[in-house]
Length: 443
Image (cartoon, rainbow, N blue to C red; front, side, top):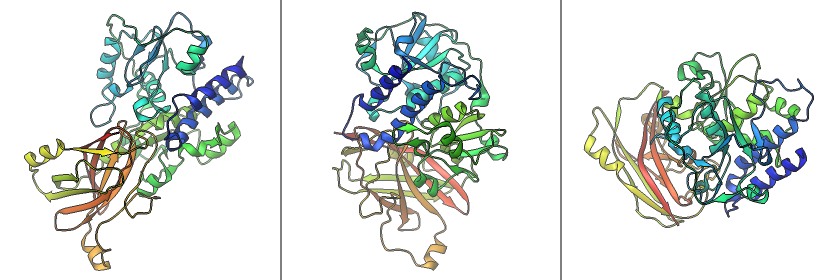
């Protein structure tokens, strides 16, 4: 039966709702395929072979559901649900800047959905508008654990597997009477900037190696999701131990991605291996660094709209002193419409005009001379992120006048809404203007 369940889980993640962009987010999908497979394999190990720091029953097979289980589908825009499931969009746990909402706000969301901390929760679903992938379910699991929910697991299999095993499928979700979700926080699961800066923790950057090279937390080691895989399988225990061999199990580990959603998958693996793992985000690190005395006076993206293959000019005007509020607020209202096709959430489609696609960076104009480069100490970039904060592009903006910085981005992106943030760096000090421009991608 265990082998049958493992096969079902693998087929589910490999074949569920395939799209032509599967190759771009396949590494993230494979991370949890392997994670699920490893979990099932561990069930057959002798007691004590793996340190039991993670409660047993993280994963529940479809035929292991009981009448007392409450199925929580965290999909943003699903059209079918396992009968009896309730739906809470995992994006509701994030604010407009893709940061996690407060524990009180999340508790209110859960309570309004009729969920109490005593319920036995089984999480299912994925981000279909983003092309699919495991991070939303893994992140939702982490969120509930962070709030102190003891009885929470992840469903091993998807809706097609549920249909094949005879479970009822409905195009409507169930509803429950609102209740009060009582929080019992587990703050040790979330790292703070002070905790990271104190130097006692080991820092793992789970983003792509390219993102790591462009900037990372001092002292961090790069261990992206792909490092944990052997083809389509999670590495064996000995293989995982080798991947994390530079880490000390007697010291806490902080793992981070742009906003922490994808890092939740790595958090699973570290916890299973017996590490004291904590979640963090690159965004929080940037926001807690010393700030430059700069304001964003204007930001533009032209032309608007733009067809796939055409270059988008992104420009930003940075000034010293007080903000010109009217111009900034006007810039925030701008929408950039892009027609194209790629992945929204878990890949990194970075197709830029006349660039090296290995780093996704382009500059306008001629290269500066050595003296010009030393004078222009302020560096400016535009960061393009998807709905869950995952980075899909990063453009180096070249200084064209005293205050204006300009760069090109040729975005191939699937339908959805993207955001642009402007980052400025000088002499080790930075300032980030988060989500100042929205990009709406249409078919």
